[in-house]
Length: 436
Image 1 (cartoon, rainbow, N blue to C red):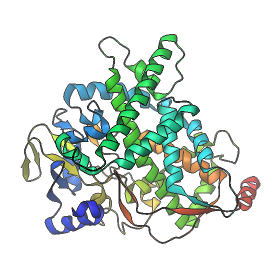
Image 2 (image 1 turned 180 degrees about the horizontal axis):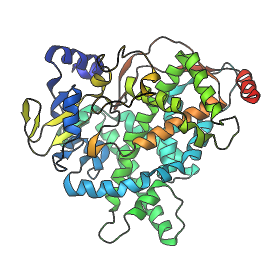
Image 3 (image 1 turned 135 degrees about the vertical axis):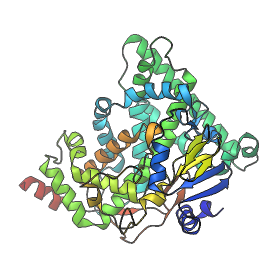
Image 4 (image 1 turned 90 degrees about the vertical axis):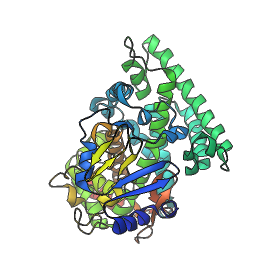
């Protein structure tokens, strides 16, 4: 299929040929793509909470598990979303930022001047460890087991598994994927049992898993272990790769624009960010330019190409009446790259986000409406903390400034090849920081 080979290019061609609304049929079923901001607002702003059967097609259970929030609808969806919202509140997020900074330091590490660093792989390790240590509460001795099984699982994953139980069993590599997936479930259930045991003694460590168990501890509200496991799978699989590619792209674009990079460093210094300052992880995310850099990265290179909404009942979208069972899918890539909304859309320009906020329906890297991604603020915080740490404590120079192809790489859209940088002497940067 054309989209499997060149997702971005294929959808751009279909948009040009068929207009802002067109139908795609593939292994997941029938999808109506929407590349119009007004119609996107209609989908996200629907007043009926039961209009959607699920956020993702049902066959995504092979990846997320049957009890994932993304596959629930109606009362079950609202209940679990309410329980999941508490651990992601701003107060809880702030408590994790120092751990995020420390993991970034460990993974990018000190090295010799001139050493080559492949930032996609380093970023992936950062985001994996953040989830395993901060969300799951795993200690250092358990991290490698999680990393190993996730790499094995995603290395064996094939989008053809979305065909459904009967079809996926005929796909080469499915048994290897299934075994790795079962191993991941064993590790997750062990963490859940550990967190439950610690909750009973009052010695929980404050990780998201412990908070999730505490949030569901009331009468008739307790999440079953299978449901918690599948939510952890969703956070792990959906969260680490999307933040990975966003961090790698941000480093790429900052590397292509030294003036912007130094301007961002100057803003961080004005806020009090300095090498060795223990408050850097709190100060960096407050920088307006930092937030604009992150927002523009998510606009120009969103990790997800589209938003999925499976209709539980017919819906009127513009001039069309769409039947139940159809997947309505606002296109992130097409709307984010619409020159009528973002002039010269392939130009990386954080100034777009330093003034007026984007209008509804024109910017939605994490989806929108009642089903917007619960991990959006977690991801933004992780990006801000990692970038602050890297800009303050490391000096990395992009090896090549030319554009890198943007392709589907597994589940996400990301760099088609590695992004290589070299370590440089930080003495000039440190002297400037000391002088100020």
